[in-house]
Length: 567
Image (cartoon, rainbow, N blue to C red; front, side, top):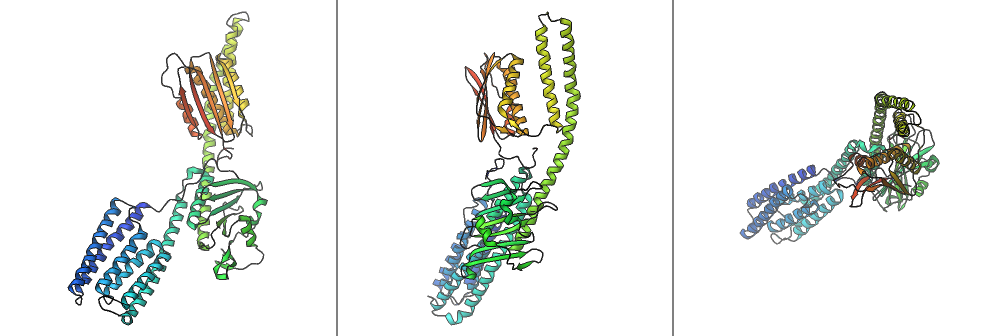
């Protein structure tokens, strides 16, 4: 497989909206102040407390209120300083110390629900249950042995059970809240992905976001290409992304799956005593089904993974659907709900269809504009050159063969012919009538250097190392860069000799234009050449010295055509 050189590694999945997260944390910090005020009022209403215990409890409340104000300031001015996973454990520790001071028979035990709810809505089920268990055990120990009132465990048994049940409900509710928030975030990211990346770039980034959401090790996607028996294969991992074009036979086991089924395979299922578990979800019927003719374990071997979930990707009207496989290498994992996988597939397919529609509309508009420009170029530029050439031809005939200016006039006619041919080549390219197929850069470079040397009279040495095959569009871009570089030598070099160097490697080309420095050395930066190199993903460097001026253009070599680009 080859890496997608245009998009490179997809960007990592962004965190949740920092503004929204900071607002939620600020609300919870403000709520801590109200909890502190409620605790202080509860301590003052405890008539059975001794003065020493009441002072100790009020001191704890004062410390907690001060800490809450400090956390509120940190959230507003130093976001990220306080971690949520630490803050609710501090809340639980403070409340347990408060119950030690006032006794377990106090109604303040209900405040233990506060850190339970925080842990549930901020960290999910596991932390919510852990906090519930911690609070229940601590309250049970205080009820059995309290420095204030002794053993009250039988009387506190009812509150202990209520605390455990309410904590379990809060943990489940908080986990569902977090899952729903993460799902909505993923769906909004799918809709908001930057369309300028093109189809391949957008799909790679969406697959990476899906991988991070599902906590999968890899995501493998295959999209059939219409008509030619090949598929585009995408593989996105935690560190890189790969794009390749493979025959349909290589991925036929996945593409032949019924388009209405989402497949799942778990090689080590706890519910089956570590035996493999198979799952098939029928999208049309909206339920799990059983079929014996689909070998899901074989697909896991092809993916080289322990577990996977594979869902259809219906891209294009009437086209064969693709497949997306979430691969998990961990022994145990939490699968993504099959109904939500179907929602994700619909959203990704809709996004890709919209991108293809935009590409078609853009191509149609660009084709019309190119044809208009080609007509204007023919009428306003080519025709004057043709008239100039005819005038030079007439002047040559009048001068006669023995006239000393005859040779110079012939050179001017040759330059006019070359310019007319070049302009007509641009017109053909703009009209989309160019010959199919690309070519190598070395013959193009030699031809341009020979033409430049003949027309300008500047002796030009050509030094090359290697060659590179490019697509028609890339070869045309290369031709423009060489012509611009040679033109700069003629306009700004003021020299009688120059050197052009080309160094080709598998992943880049380095093109250098070298000419002796002019007598007056001033600032020089070819803006047009720099912009063209930057648009192609390369860079331009100007190296000045007393002896020479060197313009170096470094260009990447693309292994694939950008999605939606002109072939």
